[in-house]
Amino acid sequence: MKNDINVYGHSEFLRVPVFCGTYVPRTKKGSNIMIISVANQKGGVGKTTSAVNIGAGLAKVGKQVLLIDADPQSHLSSWVDFQNSSSRTLVDLLYAHIAGQKVNFEDYIYTNDKMQLDYIPASNVLVGADELLETAANSQTVLQTLISQPYFSKYDYIVIDCSTAFNLMLANVLKCTDKLLIPVDGAPLAYDAVLKVLTEFVRVTGNNDIEQQMLGIVITRYGRTTIEKEVVEALQASYGNLVLEAKIPKRVEAVECTATHTTSVQKRNSAVGEQYMKIVDEILKGV
Image (cartoon, helix red, strand yellow):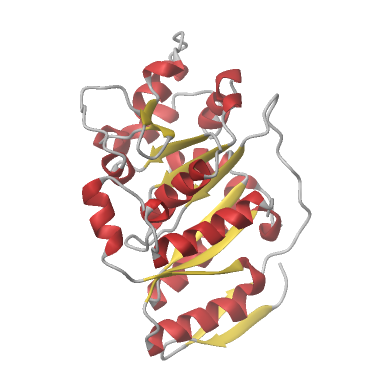
């Protein structure tokens, strides 16, 4: 860890450490999947919106995509129109694996034809996942072990919507993450949460070289107010090129899309969709 950077944010100095270190890549046998996790400790920053639109954007250009809802609030599951509460979800898959049961992955994976992607849904039962994971011999790598199974090699990208809680379920997600995306709205509290997410990522993975494993920090719900501009400037001063050029504008469109189970990237002339497709382009370039 090297020098701190002082930047002026909204009514106070924000002090953020810059991470550096040696990159030690994690490999997954027989798989070229890129696993993208979308995380922030602060809720309401467009985390699920980002996960769904990036997943749908990758599918739009012909990639095979799996979304995983790792949040017990299950907003992603609702968005992709998962309705059968009696069906199997992520927590059931985790249980079956930990219990040593023979797993037919197709029993846990569903398809959204409109978005042309697959997904593993969540339910509120996932809130108790930590107690389940603690029974596993390698409690932080259960999800990584599952995803490394040959079945998942058909996917080009797996996009995971994380919970805001720093718990064992999140540790499982971070352990198997290739690229981390942190959505941040224009609020100072969201700015503060970035450092907490990065610190947790380093703690869980043991890798200080954040830049190698960051997809980036994306500004969401951007309305160009004075406070929002200050937060963006503070992020850029602290994290430099980790802040993506794409800025997701504040629109009611995102709310409308959740109700209609559609995405902005599928809409013509959508300012929101256009910005998310810029992020998709960066992913395809192999950031």
